[in-house]
Length: 114
Ligand SMILES: [Zn+2]
Image (cartoon, rainbow, N blue to C red):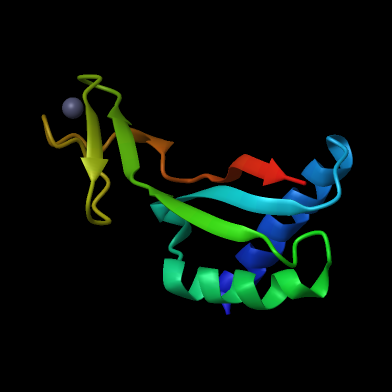
């Protein structure tokens, strides 16, 4: 399952952060997941809750998952469109020469530690 791999990546980021701070445990973790990652947040949450117990550093962590919408920048008119489907084109001029500016992220944005 795709979400299990992403949950493992998130937990890895959290563990690296804990070493960097350094701190013992994560209490609250806020994660940003771009919609381009095509993640089912319910499944991701389930996977995180199952996998976090494998390590005492993350065992009690509560995860908050924020979904980031996909946005594209048009190369001809520079309009930024938020996409609610998988059609990659400018909503203003219809041009398909667009660059993804958000929605492809997977990051830990905030962490409360103990
Ligand atoms: Zn355009």
